[in-house]
Length: 285
Length: 285
Image 1 (tube, rainbow over the protein chains, first blue to last red):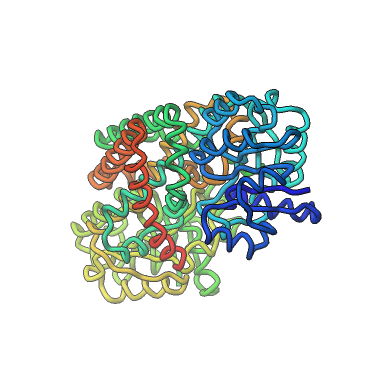
Image 2: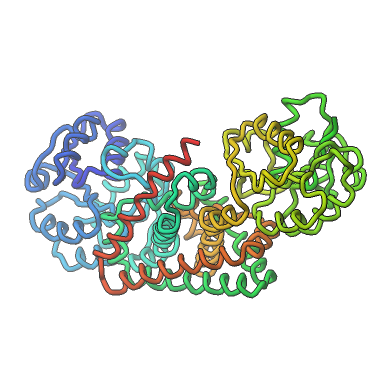
């Protein structure tokens, strides 16, 4: 059996590294525009061979589409056009509505499975890939009923084999929730990093004064712009609404501080403390 | 020698636990309004005895004022009034300008040392105290020239003994930087937690969809409102400016997303990526 990874970055690379342990006899081939990524993917043993997209489609039982979401939108129709009967494509994109709409418009929709693993780090590329990334994490499959049982079964088997917990959702529901629990976090972190960098010219001072709290809040500001710009764009409506809600709340917080209104500030923070329950749940995952 | 901890919480408690290892013969006494904190402080061996503030001032060589900053403002004049000659008070407050102004107005200013350790967690109270909290972290001393050499020397010795790196600063400079590298992080995190909680009624969905990135960004939303409300209030002008800068940047980011302006989004994020250098510096600490 041959499995292809289209876009051997953090997510596709980690998925492959984890699967290889379980399936020593499966051959993994990789497709990537970047020569650097190709070299690293081979050197780290993420894939056995680099091939063209057309070759990957011709020889692979399962094609894992793990590029940024703008490239997924471009590649998916072409890949479905050239996908032999009985073969499967799964994507790993962080947005689902636009991708599923493109798949829905295609005659071979049933050979596609729409997947989003709830895992990642602020680092990107095959150099950052590691085989434990997906272990014990949740993964969302959208519109499962639109995939044929064989393709869905194959994908679910592989996802369970890497230790993921499968959760089913509608694409619109997925994109709405993600705007709040993932996309907004990244924007708040990018903006926080930028605000501090704009202000703090003297890095020595930042080093001296920033504690671990600062590090954890701006960690996501290290994330890949090339990956995130198209995610925010594809999930524009939800992200814009979430960001608007966040800005409104920050304004109210600022007003309370400006007006020495400690009661309102305390009230905001006491409500926010309720996130403890949520985080406890996440850390239990 | 006797040392007193006024407010045996996370910071005062961790300072005491770390010092006790180096000074087995020093007696540690604690002052705290909360009976619960008193019990925990004794049970964890943070202090040997709970005493009243007046007794602490009478018997202690060094008094460590580790309450929330609003209580520091209230207690400091009284403590200086009743401080015997040759004794010292140090505070551990997260704001410095207001506290130093109060100290400056007192005849015994030279017996006070204004200190802020750059360390903390999202947890609070003596139950959260641990002896490694301050190790290898930076600590800021403000207006060192206003403290007499004996008091300053004593405080610096203890700070170095717990493994802290001393950094000197003016109170105004301290409060300005802290607004950006600490206070703003906490507000952005509180507001992020609240935004998501307001939207997400179904916690199961949050658990399933939130990844480690979300956790690290909202971790600080677990912080103590009673500790932070007075900090934001005392550093009102700087915090309001920092928060204003942050809100303006978020609005520009939102406009770029609304207008499909990927170039501007990419530009924001590429600049924000520069935080890698800063974080590398912090993690080296």
